[in-house]
Amino acid sequence: MENDHPELADKLLEYKLKAKDILAAAFLPKHDMQKTSMELLELHYQALKKVDKKVGNVSDEVQEVKKRFRAVQTGYASPWH
Image (tube, rainbow, N blue to C red):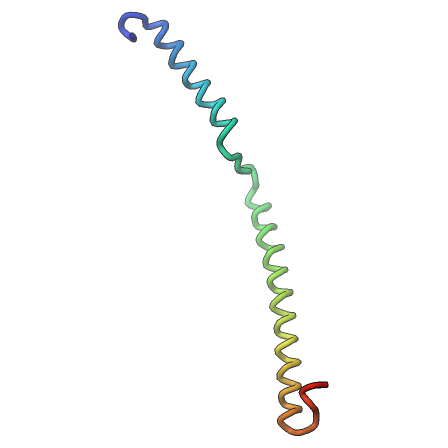
């Protein structure tokens, strides 16, 4: 076809490329690739703050359990208060 009708071959190639772009836009998932490095760092920072808060809460609970355990060991408190 390229040898017999080069103008048609060029148009067919152009048509195929446009069709590829249209189909890709319609069916492929869209990814937000526009985030800057600072935006990504901010997202990571926010996630780390949440994790840090949860770790702090768990640490507080562990300290309370240790306190109760020591009190029970020494006989000053009931574990069921």
